[in-house]
Each structure stands twice: as structure tokens, then as C-alpha cells.
Length: 349
Image (tube, rainbow, N blue to C red; front, top):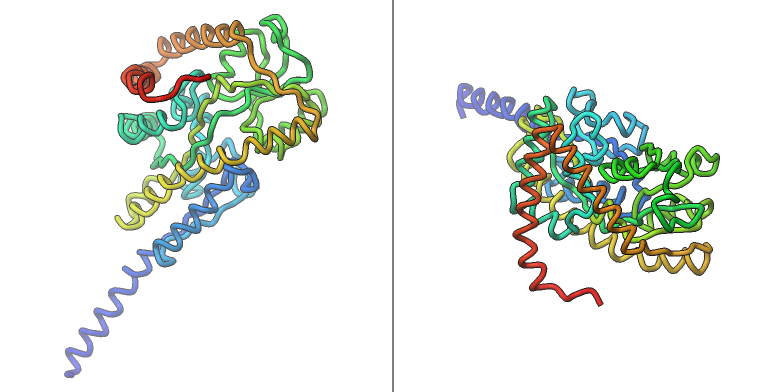
């Protein structure tokens, strides 16, 4: 080989090195929930493992426990600004910044997981989800990355038999359901998971909701509040999101983008299955070992919650155009889905 050709080969080899380096991507992912919490925090380490395997090690995710890199409630701003390049959280935490955000997290009397995913992936949900962040000025790519089954309706230190029993309570509450409770005279606050038990123990709050029984059990709510109410009318399903800085996403290879999207879609199914598998044992332990009394809301209380939610939804739609657009789209999808649901599924016996 001539010196000229040798030089060309060497130059070509050197030229490919930056390209190969550019094909490697490390996402540093602070999470809003402890990775010890099943279905809530466990999905993202599994996603990290899968993307590493599927990419042959060219795409990696380093997961940081809550508060280790940025506080849970600052993840959106930090990802958008480029302070961090990714984060795992839930859109409901951004209600104060983006009124429509809770619609992509959990909706009172809203869709269960299957119907929610149908709207997200095969209705207009995912497009509306991304557009929400774009129009609000956030430089992020959003990927739904986990979904959990119904939550408990709350942990109380006294029985709740009527609307009067709610008035004056101080309660940790999430999302749009919190607005319902506020209308019913409850003073609500939104606390991260790790701060709830100390607040209950010290009397800073009287009651709380957080998640499914297996998760709440890990946090010890049963040690302070013995009345656990069902069903979780405020969160029949809850979606969690992987946020990626938009510039980082746009510069990623098509392969890496595809791997991330598909790994998160697989995680939606996996997290839902995990959550469904763990709850009955948790309920048994709560009753048999922890002295918890399981209570069901009366039809009258559920109707009160529903009627109040409809008032809240109308007010939110009237005050925010994008909320109105998203809620109308979801409502239309659900009205069509009703035809399938009423004919295909067994009635509740």
C-alpha cells in the first residue's frame, strides 16, 4: 500500500473515532421516588439495565435516588435547562406550572391503566403530552415509562362516614384529587414520599394518600393511621414519565431514540404487572399483622367525590385553554371506549 493510501486509511480511521464516541450516550437520571418502592421506583433501574443490553453498552443510564442530584420537584426545570440530561418523575408534580399536566398523570374517576394506555399510544394522548411541554416552553422530550394500578384512597386516623368528617382535615394529597378534597374542606399539601411519615407522626398532617398498599406499607403509614379507605377514586391509574433534555434527544442516534422509547413502552406493561401482583399480600399483612381496618367508601361518598370532581374539571377547563383541549379529547375517547367496555367486560359481581 502506498504512503498516500496508508495516509487516507489512517485519516479515515481517525475521522471515525469522534463519530463512534458521539454514538455513546450516558443519561444521568435523578428519580422522584426511591428505587426500593415496587412499581413506583423499581421500573427505572430495570429500564436502565435493558437499554444497556439492547444498545450493546453504547446507551447507559445512571440512576440517582431522590434528592441526590436535584430535588424531586425540580426535575422538570433541571432537565429543560440542561442542568441534568434526564429525569424520572410524574407530570402531576407540575400542576402549579402547567395546569394540564395532571391529566397525563392521574385523573379522578379517570381511565384505568388499559384505557389510559390506549388513549396515550393509539389515541391523541402522546402527541398532546409532548405538545403540552413544547407550548409551555420546556425543552424536554417525554416518554411515558411506567403505570401503576389503583391507589388506596387514603390513610386516616379516624373513620370518615360523611362529608362533615372531612372538613378541617390536614391531608397530603396529589394532583387533581387534591382540588376535589379542598372543595370539601380539606387542607391539602403535596409532600414527597419520604416526608409523609414524619409529617403524620408529628401531627403536621392528619391523613394521607400516596400509592398502592405495597408501597404505602413500605413507608409505614399503618403505624400511625389505621383506617385505609378504598377505592382510590382519585387515581385509578397513574402514569410516570422519563424526561430527556430535548437537545440531548435530538442529538441522539435514531437507534438510541428507538431503544429508549421501546424500553419505556415495555416498562409500562412490566410496572403494571408488578403492581397488580403485589397488592393482595400487602392487604393481607395490613389486616392480619398491622391492625389496619379496610374500609369502602359508601355510594353516597363516592357520588359526592364524583360530583365535586365534575365541578373541578369544569373550572379547570374554563380557566385554561390547553386543559380544556386535552380533557375534551380524553372525554371523547372515553365515551367511545365505553361501548367496548360495557359489552366486552364482565360486570362487577
